[in-house]
Structure formats: C-alpha cells, structure tokens
Length: 138
Image 1 (cartoon, rainbow, N blue to C red):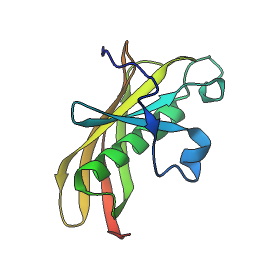
Image 2: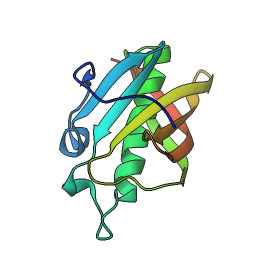
Image 3: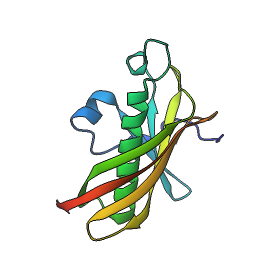
C-alpha cells in the first residue's frame, strides 16, 4: 500500500483533549507536503474478534479529516462534524499503525465538505467523506 514507516520523526499531535486523549495518543508527520496522522494500535483498541474496533477506526478518521481540514483552512477556525459517511474496507490488528489523511473537497461560508482515508502499510482500512459546520473562530 505505502512505504510509510512509523518512527521517531512522527511527533505528538496538538489538540488531543477529551476523547482524543483517551483514544490516542495521535502522532503526525508532514510527508511530501501532506500531513499524515498516526495511531499505534494497542490491545485496548481491539474488539472481541481481535481486530481494531470499527468505532476506533471511525473516530480516528473523524480526527484525521478534522485536522486535515484545519491544515488547509487554518486551525483558528472552529468547526464540528455534521456527517461522516464511511466504508470500512479492511481490519487493523494489534501492533499495526493506522495512518490517516484528510483534505477539503469544497468550502462554503457555513460548511466544509471533506474526505479522508485510513490505511496501513498493507491495506486501505477506511475511506470517508463528510460535512463539517463552521461554528466560529477561536
């Protein structure tokens, strides 16, 4: 799939309060001009079948796309998820690193349309599109 390796060049992400702090930690690295977020899969991320819980993957996608939007339009603008449409394509496993990227498809005065994907070095795990409501400035 990719040749990205998780190493010490990934640094902890900012904005990891609340649920994000509980689920993470998340890491990030600029690769060829695109910010990639990363989540190392630990036992607490797994479902009873021994693979990454779908809720973890969806929450990470929401975070990665949200941060990708901020990378493009600025992190001083506040916005919140209205909808997130996703397709889970493959499962992550303990010890995997999930990588996530997000980008703006279109921005209006009140909403942002964006897309993203979550992947490992072997598989695309999830593809998603969504809408985020602009709620003000910090």
